Image (cartoon, rainbow over all chains, first blue to last red; front, side, top):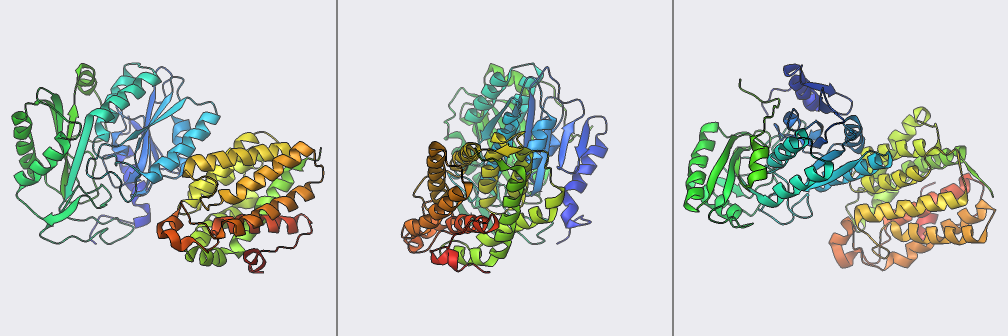
Length: 331
Length: 226
């Protein structure tokens, strides 16, 4: 293993510290609960949006904290759900008169931790609701889920809910936005390599030099099948068809199209994938209103990518257009 | 009506720590018969921390104390036992918030709410061969004592231990429908459920701790390490 690590056990708090030092005006860090929150949150005039999950998916979820996005996030160890007390403290720290919406990706560990934390917070009189994100079409049940997994579509749920909350929508209205996005977004990914959690020091699964895992999960969980690697366009076609046929998307749809890198694939390769995906969308009669090419939800240094389609309407287009700021930036 | 003091609740948790730590390998061995053999270690990992931090835990009232136990169990007990046992303590904590003593009716309501929470969290029901098969009959028996106005809590505790022990034999031949043991299907028949055994042993140890004379009659409880 060659990684930039001091103490593998401190990998998560150390990168979190870096995020906060790089954004001193925006964020604050609670090391005990591995939580980052907006400095100006909670604000009683608007709903707080909260998330928390295993680390290793950066910029999800902790680097998605900022105006118009998440108000706070707590991190578990790499690929492990945060503990209940961290989830509970995160809800408490972001408790607002307008309420708290917890966006949980559909994994058993995350759901159990947030279920308990939500129940405890409700018992304290905090107005909090939970929403489960499950956009991955690859498999119906996985190693870590009952039902579909939550993957890169999470970004759109955060973005839309963050904008709705910033616009002063009520908790029920923001929840309805989460539901609408989740019902309209579909994703599937493919892995070319495995990845190495720093504390583990070895790869989480084995894959041959000439192989790919189609439908891979963001923790390296198996997807639909192992196959020999194909040309990029052939891979995009399979992802595109699986995603587009799922809702299904139909000719005339206005869509957002995302090619998300899993951490170890260069941006140039992601644009090779985007080119094909964009052409396929146009051929299918979709209008690509917004596009997203880059890293949104990763698996450490895994080479691979996922393709996400989101069906838009006027409300969602407005919410995606709204300004937002997160820790990741190039200007 | 006899009251259960906060000191008694704290002592019961302390005794449970000792029970779980003494039975770490025994519980894992029982789990290994049909499950993945981690039950004793998973439970002990959490209770070892509770035991070590016991003196500094929040003891401002029973609810605060049990909520802290819930947090520690949820955080440190591995596998599915953490959220399941943690939920039980959390529900009990909510109903005892701010209280410094409990009536038998209070304690019975706390167990009832814990059972509901565990069912909601894990999806198991009576007859699925989980710890609920011990907790539910114990709860029923406690409700009978509340209705009858039983004043001697020792009698209630002894009856509760009897019910939990009976559950070991009553479920022995069942096939597990939840948890890891469900994955071996028919093979789980004929083996005791370690969650049920753990409840029976904890209650037996509470009898001993609180001076209730009771002789166990089921092998798994008799054979626990001294």
